Image (tube, rainbow, N blue to C red; front, side, top):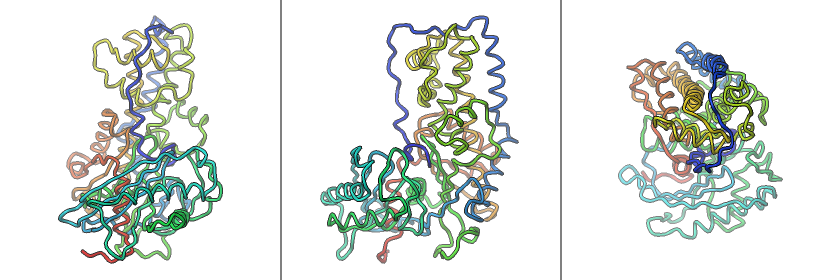
Length: 492
């Protein structure tokens, strides 16, 4: 996932502040409201996702997946090999650690596993903030800081946590930056993102960097699995449920991964999977085929830091939904329908964040008071009931398109899997593990996504496809992948 913070970004969803009671700008719908009608009509028409559009998106997703598996660069979808061939089964035993580095904090976690009977005996975690200067420093300093945080955490090990004699501690490393993975426990950093500019790491194996730093700190631990956060989510959910086949993150950014048969991966050369399966990280945010886009999407894309890229992500993820709505409201304001001048705040990119859309859509009061408060506080707009209704309509139009397209993307993945394994997906219970603040905190988005899945698959088949919320699964998932890919013989 490419957007700031590959973690699911639950923190985006917070209540807006109470507005001060000084009017700044009146959003009064006058006779010129007639000029709003064509804008709304065009918007709904361009954002429409009837069944044929959803079907095209699902088919195109499946086709792009195949093209990306055939050859690197074969489609918009990178279809990255995770080298995760051994998924957790529930039989794993012992003490395992996880490190999640995906932003300005890193998280460390340990878990004691007790096999099929006891499962997860205990877990503990800690979060450490990374000093700003280390984000611009050199590689050795950053990894030494991380390793020292890990060492301090390991020193508090005790109680229900114990390492079998003669074993080195093993850790799963969730690293949410662009990496070219070369095995289950190695990956070359392509570039830093999310505000990091660390020298001396690009082109190096990030696992080697961490292992060397742990040795310098005298920490008896080694990385046995390097994973993407989406892959960690799948592994964490799979531990509890053997029917989990797909994991999706819908938060600030978005991504999806799934369990693939290795005999369908033409670009897989020289790698033999003991299980005949592996997890593929689709990087589906880059998908762009046949999406219903508006002038507002195109303008936002042109103004973005990555024009022409991540179009699916810009249409369905939490980073962008609020900004698309803001651009629509600005156009309505410019049409003169809401007053004689345009409030300065409404002209500020990304001032209207997606959590505010969710809060406005949860307002079921007669006078839409919460909608009025948010417009007033966030955009400097004082509104009457008619104006508030228009705003809610705009929110719903953009969110409906996003949720339904996300649903079509999920069906595209399932469709591709079903084509290769007749009946093994649609013929039985199949679980999609879902994480991320957008999915968790936006009920309308969630419902539109589910509706699209049901429409595309039909009622009977869709009953077998279960979309399950898997909150913060990627951390424990990394520890479970360390266990499943342990260097030691399992004593099952």
